[in-house]
Length: 341
Picture 1 (tube, rainbow, N blue to C red):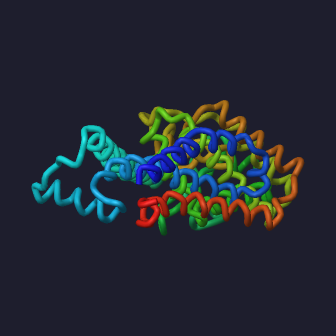
Picture 2: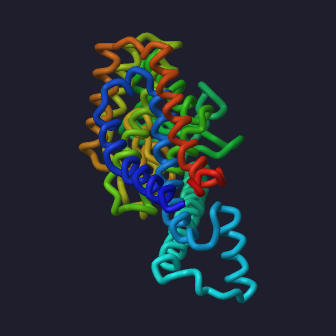
Picture 3: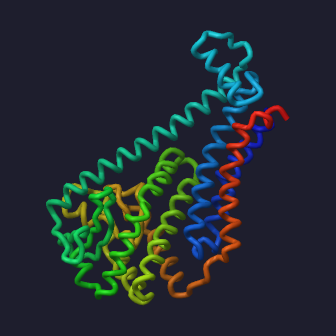
């Protein structure tokens, strides 16, 4: 049983450090962003499960030869006043750490959701006051601001795309269509849910450099997915020009004292998508300007010099690797026979 905890610990270390660094530096994700997104999710989920599982398995080792048996004895100790003689100090420490880490991750996930939900609700209230409906679409509103701004505000049936009149005046019809499709893709593919999870991971483990690295990479992949969807309806030149125009807009503002500034300060999802650090909990919140410029540069370079998507065989291998990553800690935790080896 001890070897299972060691295997989980090794897997957790690999998924927390070298794996995200290697993946973030790889060139192939830009060729198949959806496949890369699956791998990033597998790394995050398997890493968290391995981290908690390693401490849990090690702590339960004296209590049984499998997870269910160990948890049953532990429940008897906690709720049935059974003897704790079988548990040493370090076993109690490991079990406590596993419980606290799991609780911390779940609590941070819920806290991040509540914070983002409140920010979106406040932002939606501001939009009702400061925006007007767009003639192009019932789900699009326009704010009065000279800077080129475009972003989407998720909210189920109340989801809207927000444009500034400064942006509308700068764009040709094809370019405006590219912006609208790009933003609509964020909403229909529910990218905000994915970024919510990665934002929570970053908030829960800020001391882990790869949590920030993962969030940045996922942000960029989401933008590429939306770009690919826009390319199905508009030409590449229009999309590139739209990206350049939106990226030239004023940067986001942290302050929300001024209502108009709070709206105009939300940067474009065409320029960046960050559900975690936005003051309004929407795509395109404030983040390091250098990273925003790098993301835009990567997207434009990808469009100017396109590379073929990964072959189907390569994508299948990566998806299989993702499934294996999720299966490994699960099998180590729940298959009783492995603990007894």
